[in-house]
Length: 129
Length: 496
Image 1 (cartoon, rainbow over the protein chains, first blue to last red):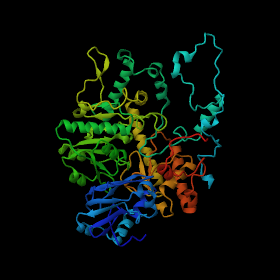
Image 2 (tube, each protein chain N blue to C red):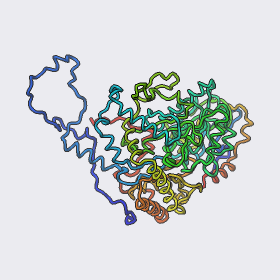
Image 3 (tube, chains in turn brown, green):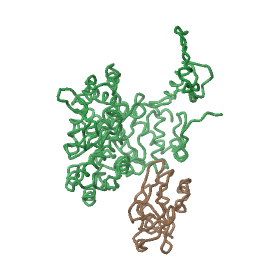
């Protein structure tokens, strides 16, 4: 799997695509694959404050419920409401099925995240299969 | 291929619809004798509240009723048919002596509204079981009210909250290791604590330095399962307790895996402040569809004032009774006094075994898990080398190379005559296969199991499709679990 180079990644398997002072966040293909069929995505409300490294929602699959971790700090400006009725979109194309848009508190926080090649390496080590 | 399956053969089972669908108007399984007393006009007595329409009740004959339920029962797998190796569930045999005792007339016909003075026998059962469980856990006091394990956890955390509140220092967080039972974080969230995850180290135990770094005066408690879900005993348990206590936190133990400890070590002796037990796991009362659960919570003296009320006491006149005047209690958590029928069965189990017998069951449970570990090591990957207690966790790493995952192997196990093990849990092991045989299994049954698992591993190499398409011998094969979760149909509706 080639991970898009236009964005950054976390060790908790989120991706974040920045555009100036705003950014879009979702989970990676590796995450959706490990979770299995996703049945429910719980997202924060517009206006919610996110803190880097803290949870902002949950994603529930047939196997387990997992937390979503904020890659950076910011304020939620938009959520992908389609996921409430079609959570399977995350399984179909995790890198297109975004979850939230935020306005960034400190764009410099992006620098500490993983590049696509670093993330690919990390996943290869972690999963092993 | 099928000659490898020694334990199971195909058994014809019959299709069966819903009992409502068998109904035909006027059919009945009863017949009343002719009236030999004056007839009463119910409508004149009841007027408008007389109910004439009984709704949609099935009208079927006696043999149709019997066949209906007998056919359904043949679709089931049960502990009475074979091994049920669901990890962390302790699906042990439910001894028949438990049932014999539960059916003794005075016990079976007792009612919670009976006056205390004619309920002394039932109260004595509650008291004796409480004493036994306090002795086994090394704690100081207990409540038997909670209806099952997760309910026990919630009761425990309500007591933790009440305790910190009484100290004038309400706290915000509960620490939970990543190897914990999934109910632990759910419980903490229900009781309105923030959950903080605690990483495991390479041994599969709590990382002591991470704990020390994360512990502070905002932490109300650590919820620890011991042995944890890897089947590993937390060897640093004393240090863990000390780190918690130094900052005023409490150590909660999830006692779901107590089947590895009974008669050998006592949580009260290694620093646990409160814990729940699952009578439907460790103490052999029915688990699953067979009966309600029971999740007593045992505590140290500092938490006793917060126990749910009423609390069983010895009254001045020498009789037993309930005390309701408990100003610091978290209140009642269950109707009446808990699932009394399970208390009777658990006490029968404890007393039938006695202290040495209980110790023996613990030793046999650990022996059986290690027998399976030894038998399957090399065939399946063992992610943690730490010694195994009552359950062993393998992973599907070797089989995943052929595209076969833990769920596929579990489904294939059904064809071999076994209930599947626990799949994909604990979450810290990718592709986990969690196996708990319990003490109930003979060496012959364990050999069948090891042989079945090895045979499936061979099939993965030779013909993975057989495993990927399993089960082949059941009424239905793979159900669409995703559709069931995404678009559940919760109500039967008649076909019009």
